[in-house]
Image 1 (tube, rainbow, N blue to C red):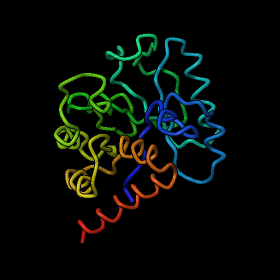
Image 2 (image 1 turned 60 degrees about the vertical axis):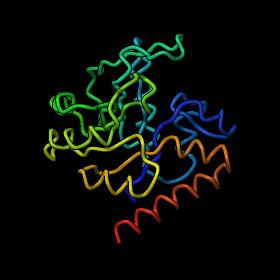
Image 3 (image 1 turned 180 degrees about the horizontal axis):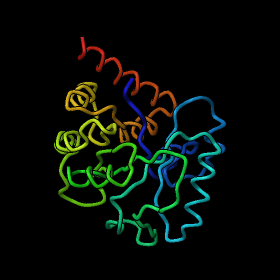
Length: 209
């Protein structure tokens, strides 16, 4: 189904045995859990050697793509001690790069011109900057700007299978869910995540029917 789990920080606040994008488990440990398609979410640090090492490790561990987060040139009003950048390193990596954090046609065109293999329409859960548009509102113009050259995914605001259907109807190739996973994880652990994914699938199939 076209539903994927978004990288979400600090998941151990919901459950002690989970992974976050600021991960407490290595890419090698994640890869050892079994089959599946995995993307590596990357924040570009000032020390480019660290970035290169992370990318190489993810590639060796079998991760299929890099999701490069570009909407944090400066961190929003959150943890002041976390330093991040947003420039793409110029190394020629073998892995494809998906640009995460695009909300406008202009940024979509820039991402494609600079070699992005895909786009993730995301507003960082509206936590990075207040008053950003809902991702479903930005999706159509990004899809039009992409002109079918790369897949476009939607991240944020998906709570029901009908939301998945609407995103696909507007041209998305798939969607990512974040908060529903964290909420279900806190409530029922792994069983909760299985339940929320099954609920979304059932609702999506019913809407299609």
